[in-house]
Structures are given as C-alpha cells and as structure tokens.
Image (cartoon, rainbow, N blue to C red):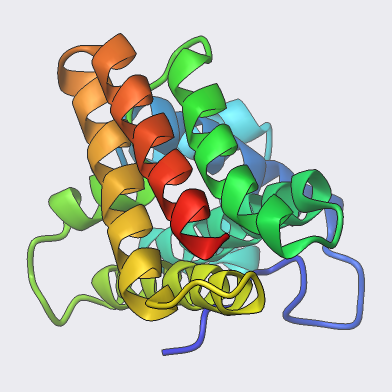
Length: 195
C-alpha cells in the first residue's frame, strides 16, 4: 500500500481547516494515543464544525490513515533537511533524529510503533501504512549504505531500523540514556563497516 499524505496527494493546496484538523490529530494522537481521542474532541480542538470535519475526512478512520501519511512525510522531510543530500547524512539523520525525539519534551515513543500497537489486526489499513513506512526507511538506509560502500548494506539497514525502533521503545519505557547510547553505537559500527 503506497503511503499518501494529504499534503502531497493533490496538486491543490490543502484547505486550512483540513490542515488544522490534521495538525490537531497529529498532536493529540501522538501524545495521547489514537483510540483515546474522540471525534468530538478533535472537532473542538481544531475549531471546526462537525460538517467541516466530515467534509474533509468522512470518518476518524480516514483521518487516522491521513495522520500516518502526514507523519511519514514529516519524518522524511526531517531526514532530507538534516542529510543535506549526502548518503552518510541520511544514515546519520535517521539516528540523530531518533535521539533528538527521545530528548524532546513529551516524548511518547515512535508514533508508528504506537499505531501498530493500537491496531493489532494484521490486515488493518493502519498496519499496512506502518509496515510500508518501515520498509521505505530501510530501503532509504540501504541505498545510502550501498552508496557508502557498505559490504552488507541491506542487512545493515535492517539492523539500523531495528536499533532505532528499539531505542525509541526502550527510551519511552525504560532507560533513555542507555537507549540513546546503544543506538549511537549501532550507528558508529554501521558507518565503520562502510569505510
């Protein structure tokens, strides 16, 4: 399932009310959980009418999928910005951004892992987006590591995605310092093997 974001799904700019709903959902879903936030709260905090909400999203289910697409696009944009066009920059950005997230106020773990936990049914469309997000991240790392000459780029990319996931989960549920240190060591070993 290709990931689409309401920000890029159309050539027309996103309507301000639709964007406001999406940004409100991003804040609330990330901080409180997707299933914990009801439609009425989303509508109230977005300062839109019920009719406006349903005009743009039709249902909370559609909003959830758009939220995950939006998160995917935000994460890729952050990687692009930090990487500045370099293969090593991509690899470093994935790790540095995870560490930055862990150190941020209100850190609640990885939004994609959290979404997967909230929708345990393997065939749920949200799970498909989470799976695709992780696969695309691994592909991006694989491409960068191949460019750097890593002898086992695919395996190293998978290892780094898992290390990132583990660090984000471990930092939220346990020792953030140990999680960040372990992730940094994974990055250092990966880059050393590419030299």
